[in-house]
Length: 412
Image 1 (cartoon, rainbow, N blue to C red):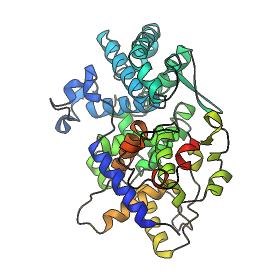
Image 2 (cartoon, rainbow, N blue to C red):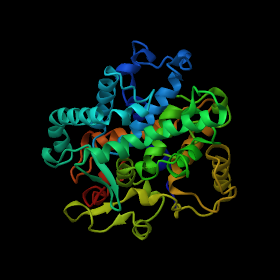
Image 3 (cartoon, helix red, strand yellow):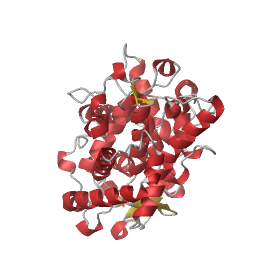
Image 4 (spheres, one colour):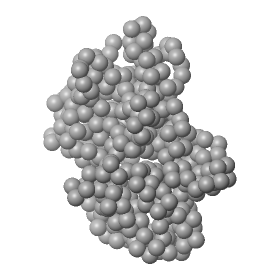
């Protein structure tokens, strides 16, 4: 049976860590958007629907965030975010306003490529040694250019491939939405991307459509994790959702936790995932791939968790009723009468249950994910010797307290 007290304690701890260490891109430092923010770095919400050119500030920020999450699939979050911030600022100084006029990205592709290469080299000199030390590798392997393969994301050297596929695809989405709107309405839209996002019944449906929609989906340019990070940024971190849409159910529980290697590594080593299913289950699903990790360790392919069910919970009618309410009210996805709980929805269920008896909401899914990201990128690193002694979770982590093999034998 599931140890609910352990799961609740771990969830609460991660939420508290996430509240203290917010994980978000530094939009207030992007030169052309600085006037969107106060001197303290807070977004000026009262002017969010003011026009900046032909689009609103809300639209421009949403566009930047989508490109940010597409690029954030790379190996170094700090480096990727600095790359996007600096290239954007440099292009805008030259009048190439890629978020206001996406076609300018392609019209000036030579300048774009030069700026990406220049900034990548500068960031590599700044970040490579620190990154290599954190990841127990060598600085010469530092590279922010990547592509999709049947083995997942792989490092590439071709900057044109990277620029067109990673930068160009989301920028093309903004251009296509704008053109489609003008064609159908014969007028210029102020929020084409925002209107498209908020046309869906929930943030979860929107996240799935970002990847899979036949006309507007980004396909292999974006992963499931990145789609859900965007939902988190849009709904919770930057609170860009219009009030009437938020009132219809676009809340902090209306999307799934972004499961990636950092989050999955923390959840596995602490014992969270082992409260959901057994090691044998994870082997059967291809989540645990024996001997296929670095140095012969077991490899955790966290993306394979998706859509697999919690096996350690019996079909408790009351619990399934709560879960059905989450699916119907927040995520707005089938089935209406679930027979089991999906592992990816356990954080939603735990957060919902923790808040149920409180007079006001205290626990948030976004904080839970921020906590996972902080732990995964600063303490629970992808090595067999992470920084457990200084980790915020060491008082509850099963890998640290009683099962060291969860740390020593598994890598992502």
